[in-house]
Length: 418
Image (cartoon, rainbow, N blue to C red; front, side, top):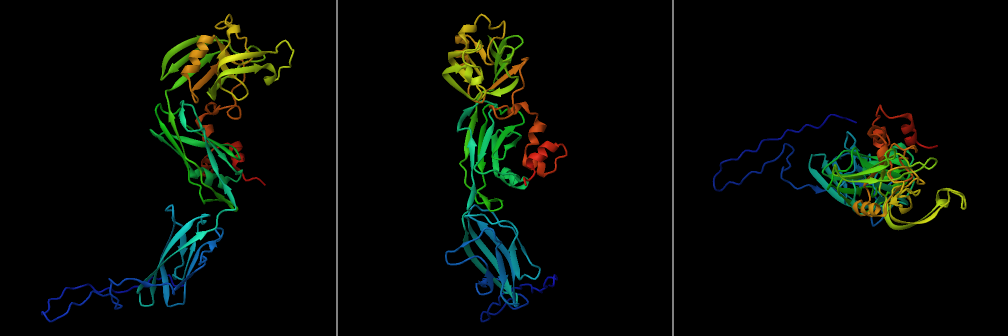
């Protein structure tokens, strides 16, 4: 193939003064073709491997467009789907073949525009459309929580319909999941496991922010014969910054709204053997009435620690049953001693006030307890107990860029499974 471009001399156009009986000479190139001539129909000059007549192309195969014969060449190809995404491709130096270099989307309709020229340099054009077959395996994403208003600590979740283990495939998925906040914040996804991701900003969400979550995986090739499906977008609004800090050592809870202390409440937390978890938790929900049994946390029925109690104004902070709730039976110990089985107890009046003044996503932090640290995942939202550096290492995109701070453990999570 000859890589040397053709060189044609183009004559400059000159307006001539003529007599009233003279004609006007059109501007023309050195090959004699008018520069203003419309491209000829190049339908019989090119061939392509996309099926015609309603057939659907296999998205696993590249699109190929070939010039027929040796007396013409392809000069340009643009292929675009209905979403406006361009299909990348390469044209050979001799202009005889164009081939797509990116994966075709599944279940998509493409419009392809081909520009050509004949042996004399006359321009030709052809436009055609084709559709690709839908994916046999579609990876869909469900975002959470449900739309609504939340506190500044609420993470965004993404549940995948199929497991994704390969590092490169994870990067494809993550790149398509967009979280936008107004005002803007720095944030990142974290792969909790093969089917679940969490997103949080570096710091808590700004008060009054609007958070929009979208997935752009539709038709995108994720892995071997797995393509992305459509996902329903999600919008959250963020309320005031409400933080409840419980000091298990001083048996006191301090509640702040937007940095200002709005209440100080005497409490009791977990006694030895049932110590309340330390760390940052996020309000998961509120239940006016809950029946609490010792058997739910492994206490044998009939033992000295057994209990079965009606509980009111219960604000949940872990899935395993840790609440902030009314505990009228322990009022004498509130502010003095820790006597609960792990929950944070307070008077009925204080519990009702707390219940009315917090929402899902608000922060509940416990310090100075003899208990273990709140798990980052699996028992609620302990996401904020990871440092920002550790959180970023859970992103497939950070690992893809070769972040030198990434730990071997983080890399192992993203390594392809055999």
